[in-house]
Image 1 (cartoon, one colour):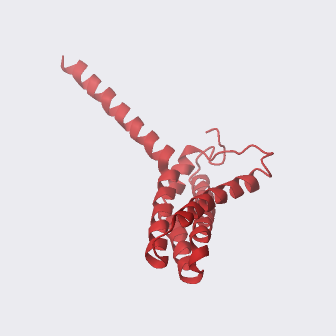
Image 2 (cartoon, rainbow, N blue to C red; image 1 turned 45 degrees about the horizontal axis):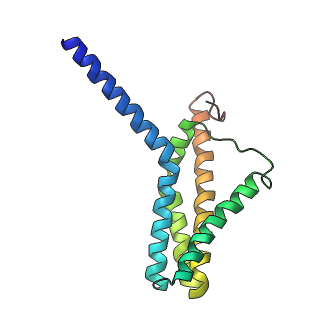
Image 3 (tube, rainbow, N blue to C red; image 1 turned 180 degrees about the vertical axis):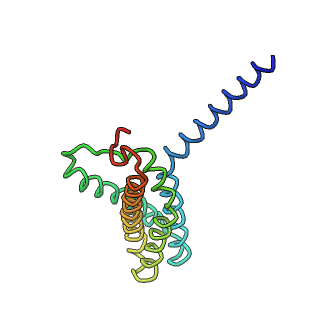
Length: 160
């Protein structure tokens, strides 16, 4: 009986571990982005003042437009398929998300302090997203380089 129980516990433990790994890896980039965009909204609200409905719409549409712009650029006008970094690189790269979150939030603060109120909401969202995404790309490049230096096979192969 003891062997069956430990085998069952071992299976549960392995399943929980795999589940946690999947949740962490698959959500890591989105988690950093969520923190950055929410804190950017809060910073703009604090520094520029409560947004109107038009400000909220401008913020949301500008954040989405930033991703559309990045997608268009990286796919050469949506004509090229995108690759993906290996999971180990994504995990390592997004572990540095504190930097990209800080830079995106910092950009929103700079915009709030320098751009007129009417434009601060859409410009703050657009630039915060661009800075976050570009700095996260640099983090992933560094992670890929570190993986190569560690001798990890497939550090640049998206299928590994």
